[in-house]
Length: 122
Image (cartoon, rainbow, N blue to C red; front, side, top):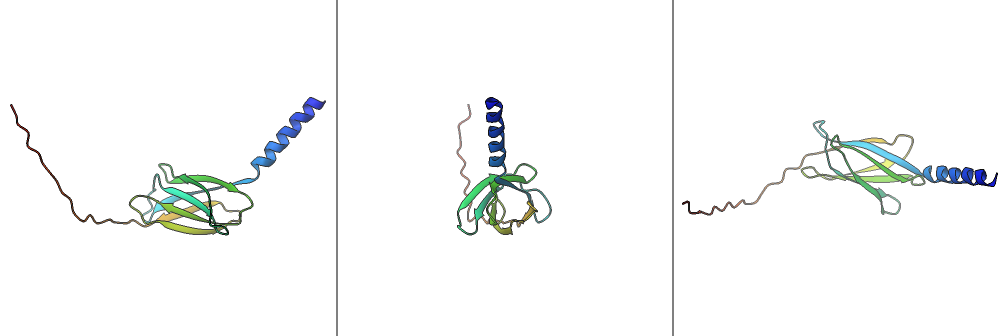
């Protein structure tokens, strides 16, 4: 009897601990509708400005990050090579699936130097 009660308590505590996290998921796309793979996604608490959690998008631009359930408002900061960084403010409700669109950023190179070395052939 005591052994089975111990298992019930252990299972119940694990269930409660799991329920204290919520999952924020979404997709990062470019303005033309294409997916942005391997983008950095950082979630911050707006009330304390501290980083809560972070992750990366997969090949299809999808991400999924868990955060504590007591947080009410967050900012999501998304950055990727070739795109402008974007910050999105979100008031948490029942919808945790988010689509974020990034604008492309063109970087002009100042100067390119190509050096060629001659080698002697036999």
